[in-house]
Amino acid sequence: MTSFHDILGTDDKTGSADVKRRYKLLSSRLHPDKGGSKALMQMIVQAYEKVSAGKGHEEAVRTIQLKDPSAESNNAKLKHLEREFVGLKKLNEQLTQQLKEEQEKNRSSNKESERYTNAVEDELKWLRRENRRLNSQLEEARRKVSENTRAIVPSSGSASSSGASVSMDDLAPKVQNQLKALGGFNIRRYGLVLMMPAIIAGLLFTLGKEPWLALLAMFEEPKEKPEAVVTILDTNPVDAAASAALSEKQVLNVAPVKPKPKPRIKLESISGLWQLRFYENNRMPYISVRSEKGSYVVKSCNTGFQYYRNSNLRSGRLSANLIFDRQDRHFMIYNIPYGNGSFAANWSESKSLLINKEYFPNEGFAEAYYQLQQACPY
Image 1 (cartoon, helix red, strand yellow):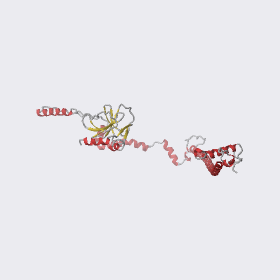
Image 2 (cartoon, helix red, strand yellow):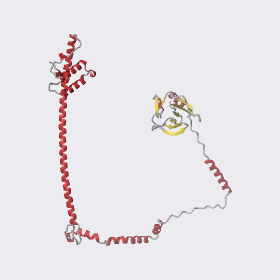
Image 3 (tube, one colour):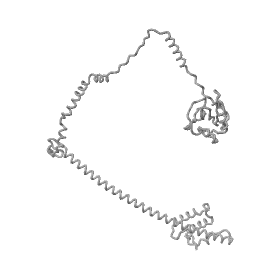
């Protein structure tokens, strides 16, 4: 006989918390939304209700209420439920085995943690004992140093701080010499200091007066060199004419040269199409495409691709490959020496390019680029 306890894997001694945990675990695995069956879920719910009411020992399969009155259908469903029950029972055994393994792992990890904690506490106790021992040794060393200092420092003819007098005979010879040198007059050292100026003066006298002059020149301010004044007594007429012609030639050479005008593109109303055009002021060919925001990408014979940004647009952070060139009308012109949009292959291999957050299509680029190559004079 299969009881409701067998379905949930419980018995009469199982607490309500464990019963609820078993029910949640089985329902989460055998719910119809997660690949289970409706009949099996109904069996689990009924088993949970019976076990919670204290009727888990009753027979489970025969107490299930079926809506279909057909006996054959009931027998088929009964067999199906029995097969599902067998699978459920195996699953319950597997879950029980997994639970035991997890509990065993938890116990082993708790034991390991307890051993580690005990080891750390033992090490901490050892460190504290070592700290106390070192502190005691330090205090003892300080006490000995203080006693030795008080014993070494002498007092000439007077009592020490402890009331006992120390004579010079009780000290070591090396200490006696050091104490005598503290208040003595070092004749050798002071004699050497006084003789140094005389030695330097003697060396200077032997070398002659040049060192004295060089030494005095270090403290004198440099004199300004007199400017040479050239006085022309008589002028040659030929030299005067040559000088006038030379000055006139210099004036002509200094005259400012008018700079060549920068090329100016034509404004287009069509956007998204590459076309061959000619500059307004020098009739040189170029190709260009216009974006929806009024900016242009231009390529001429002697320049690479250039980005004409419409300055009426809201300014933002530019890309690193845009190098400022000049300003023309309402355009801020940037060279594109590298990166996206700097080569013809970039345009021919893509449908459009994004430059400074503006899309420029490549429609008609291949034809316009070929026309530019044909129109360039070199």
